[in-house]
Image (cartoon, rainbow, N blue to C red; front, side):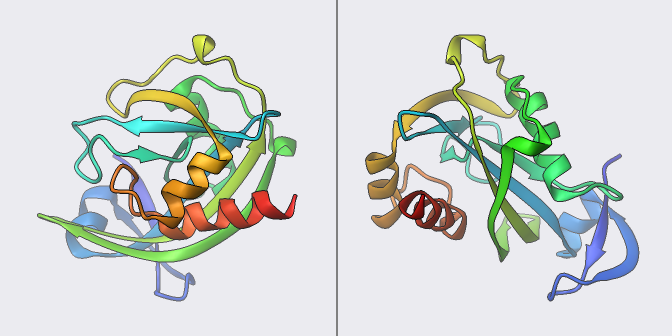
Amino acid sequence: MEMFEELDNCGCYTGRTVSREDAHRDGNWHRAVLLFIVNDKNQVLMQKRSVHKKLWPGCWDGTGGGHVEAGDLGYCCAIKEMKEELNIDINESDIRYIGGYLSDNKKGDIHDRHINEFYVAHKNVDVKDVKLQESEVEQIKWIDFDVFKQWTTSRSPELTTKWEAFDSLVRYMERK
């Protein structure tokens, strides 16, 4: 059973842990991460979420991410999720923190309240070497940064609604 550290709405630990099921049923604040991989061609590796996901089924999202389990660190979770979802190895020294925000999403019986952390890694990945975790990811592809930025600024319905994460990557990419 996945256990999360419960947070207050400022991101401070309450000292309690809650199960994934309880957190999503009761709307307990907990941590989540999203990692973007960017290659030397200024492209972003995007994943299309499985159509079986409860939130944003079939939508394009960052390269990988997930919930931070109790006792874990955000960047460690990002590294672990990349390995689990796409079989991509990321080293701690490869990633940079680029932002964070609070999100509060409701759909049906799920109340998902996150303190989010966003990371970027610069890495050239051959998509032929990627092994998808099919329960999570339907497809991956490289998206030119200009297309990614257009999707983000137009709030494309093809994307998850993680606008703060996408906007953080745009700001980061425009500064580098």
